[in-house]
Image (cartoon, rainbow, N blue to C red; front, side, top):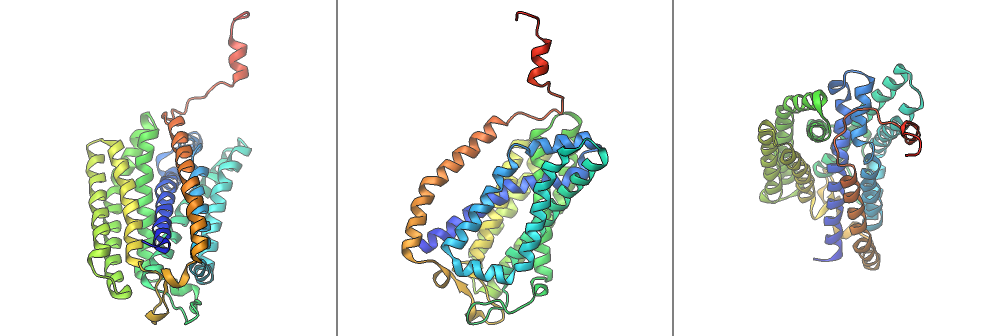
Length: 349
């Protein structure tokens, strides 16, 4: 396997990390209006992802930077063709990030409700556009012989790509509900479990439809043998069904593992549907961007590989430690400040 293939696979790993970790963040934001009943409970839900959400977004930064460095022509074509779509993603991510910080700037119920709503909007919007964007890579967009995008923003929308966006939303909401059942206690945990059961058939139908259609699109538009994308797509459907069965049996940890595996296999299905291309051209298939005609020079890939071998294990260890430290369930109980605890101690203690 040459370094071009290695970096194509590594990009798939980076996007998998982003969608698995940020996926449950998005899911928690989507469920704020449905699981929480008041401002205090919305705050409890946000506390479940408070220590980790910004670390999860590092995967997006790394994936974007790696795409730019390893496949600059792919990066350029996506940013020119998907310019408005990527601006929309940036908008949704920005209002979501701001909502975490600004919600705490005032104790006004109205102020906090507005920023909780902003978090929910960003949590729905970003995965919707991500799904549409990734589906277009497989379906194909109009590229000329110079690999420049020649279409319009509206060319990105079709029944298949919109289904992909909606399926991403449903899968992430289901994933987020499973995360909440592991992080909450009491009535909030029970409500999260009920939300997960209600989301299960929606996620199953939309997810399966999207994956089956992706296999068909890969065969029809990208000249792929059916088994190549069908294997990860079929495995994703199986793990999704297992997640539902395990949820009904109250095996919440295993169920969350299965939704994580489902999202990872969805990314695998998309990347295997693309390979050896990175951006399909439609209707002129000959203008497609491939791994070979969009990659950086060999020396650049060698340097990037050395850096990745050194830094990626550090990132994984750091994030694993973060999740270990903040593994306890969130109860929503008020915690006294250190100053208050010291005041309550008997004198001389």
